[in-house]
Amino acid sequence: MGQFFGRRLGERLGAAARRGRARGELGGLRLGPWAAAVLVAVAVAPLHAGNLVINGSFETNTNGVGYLDYNTAATGWSNSGSTAGRPQAFNFIVDANADKRPGGGFNSELGTIWVWGPQYSEAPSANGFTGSGYGTYFLGGDGAYATGPVSQVIGGLTVNEQYTLSFVWGAAQFTDVKDQGFNAGWQISFGSEVANTETVSLPSRGFAPWRSFSTTFTASAVSQTLSFLATGGPAGVPPFSLLDNVSLEPTNGPPPPGVVPEIDASAATSVLALVGGVLGCAERRRRTRGAAR
Image (cartoon, rainbow, N blue to C red):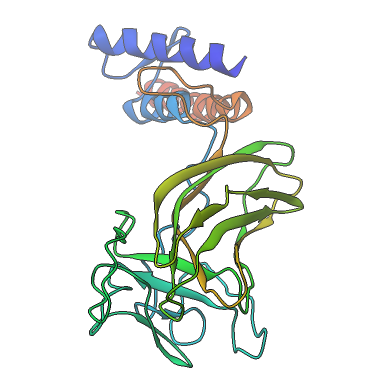
């Protein structure tokens, strides 16, 4: 119904414009320019929002790289608090210099931490470590020590509507350990639903190149918590899961360019009623002025 109405309305207004009727036309009514503009906006406005995640690439932060919610913070995101004797779960805002020694790395309350990579001057690892390509910063989480989720409350949901979550991720290893392989991944929760990335297994000093992941969730409330928990092991071999470019959008989102989107028919009806009322008032005023002459 909404899609049909939007298409027909667009056709009528488009035809009127092509005929050069600057005032607009709809169903025999001659509309002012502003009214036609309002109707066009309603006719083409999609029903769905874009990315519902705030700061999905972690670019907006208070202090650059560092220990999340200890010496830096990322807008929209929360660390999970004290665990295993640490002031926060071992989650960090990092950048492509996380392997650079001297001059790079990132700080916790224990001092500077590095990951293995080609910029680690004491013992370079030609593992290809790099940033994600989505801005400067990204998230990193220890999957085997002081673990805890990083989360964000997502509002504006429609109950029983499906939402597609997508992001890029990779994995690295702290330089604490030199001779033991590790595995890493992410566990994602949205409301009561849980999903997991694959688990990558890497040799000592390894790096898992960035890759894409997506999954679909169904909203059970108008507001739900989205959380990311780094996973991995073995214990004592610091696996470091990396995350960036997080997006959550309605699965049935706006149509591609060139396709007339469905509109909210009830909203269009309200606008039509408003325009009709304004036009009625204008017509009565015109007649009153005519009679006065």
